[in-house]
Image (cartoon, rainbow, N blue to C red; front, side, top):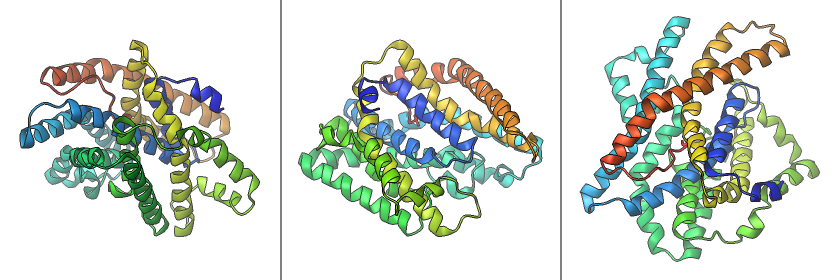
Length: 347
């Protein structure tokens, strides 16, 4: 397994695979999307560190240009996805926060802080967190650049521990605050600014170690039951799930970050660009499928409608990439918005 991953999936393929993990999480009873989102955060940290270094201007002008460029990177498709989901909810007769009025729409446009007003796309919490990170990224880059390498990676460990403590004390995995996820962003930034990661050679065996512990240690094995979490799950189960998901995210971190060192072909870049609309637009199809699916649907029925949803998601994502995202990002780069970096799933 490690040898296969070390062989080098391109960064684009890696991002699409992570987006598909989120898809599977939303179309099944497995709550496995959180480690993929944590990986997106780390990849985002890597690319944003490089973009900040490239950003022209000084002081306030440089910062403002950076933030506006990042907003333009994620907002166009996100706004289309929100509008489309609001329409679908209305057609299905589902109560939606989109009917809250103008202030709600204004909050969605800002992205950072939008979750507090209510979301029509559940996965949008991660984009809220992402936009918060963009606002903080220049300051984190300044801090990471001034600390010695070992101290900077030590700070990553502290931030990871803080995130684990927050999850242990009841913070939800989807809490729209950057703090419990800051360790992943910072790890990605340091992978770009202060490589290599200490003990990277040993850490690449992290996924194997996690699987071995879950299989071999009886007291840890019950954590696997937290992979299936419903709204009625007690708080202690949700805390266990959050800690397990964070542990898996940390275990895969060195392998995910290795993908950015693999030379990306034109096809790989296109595949990576496809990951963001897949992350956004699969919820359109998920909403319709789960609304129309009968309560006594067979496994074959579920497999078929999930397959159709996947095909629909890929088609809509490719069209959005061609008609909207590609032209917008080319225009943004002409304005000085930076190179052809991936958004979080991006993000």
